[in-house]
Amino acid sequence: MKIESWIFGAGVFFFVPVSLVYGFLTNWHEWVGTLGILLVGGLSGMIGGYLGFTGKRIGMRPEDRNDAEIHEGAGEQGHFSPWSWWPLVLGLACAGGFLGLAVGWWILFIAAGLAVVALVGWVFEYSRGDHAH
Image (cartoon, rainbow, N blue to C red; front, side, top):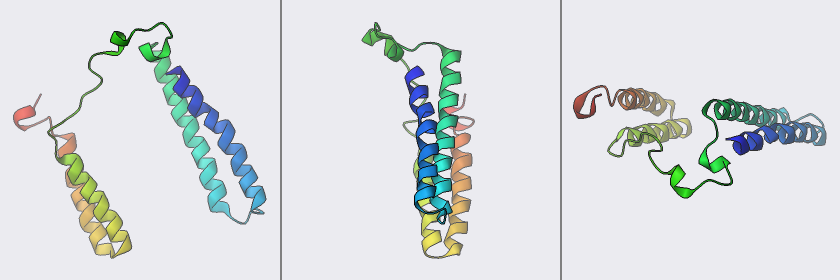
């Protein structure tokens, strides 16, 4: 994860000066863009710091070494739910939320309730039923 942490960490040294240049070019009248670019720099630094600390904790991966073989990266890469319908329900709730922002606030409240149900269902999917652990 060393290269990923360096890439995201370098974003701080790019976005912070760009935000200052942007503010200077707009005569400091357009604060939203300046603040937005500055926040992107901060987010880039947080992600780079997280990846750096995680890389020190878990050690070198096969992707980080030049002498690594392809078979070293084989195996389980994570836990995924191929039969889960909850991501689709959550996506529909988010789409309904954006529709509510554009059309009417009452749709937003319905979508927020659906999003809560979808999140609870997705989190507790493995706590009950056929796939309980």
